[in-house]
Image (tube, rainbow, N blue to C red):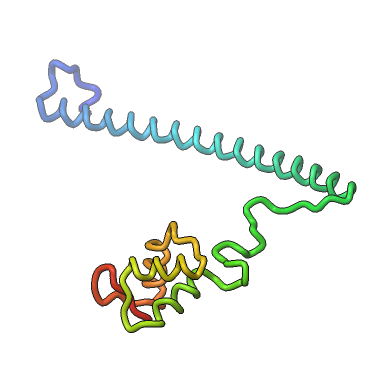
Length: 147
């Protein structure tokens, strides 16, 4: 005789516990299946929306070009992100500044970068990036040297 065919009053504590666990597991699987189905439906809606958006955007760009306008892509800066007016990258210029002395502290690097006309707003992130890239080393905290 199976656990499910017995009456609740006839079940032992272990059998009741096993039945409760089994039902919890079935309920969790059912809920996960519902979530998965809902996710798939939303992903399909997203895919359709993106397709419509691309089609509409393409049509607008075509009309702009017909009128002699130029259409730039969203998110592209023509490869000028992180570059100075002369075409030299900020990272490259920072490496040159650090290479001018055996070791330089962060404040000294920042002062030299400001003199060179660089934007120093994110200098610590740029220095950390150069360190990860292996272009700079840091013998101790806040001090950098050329690799």
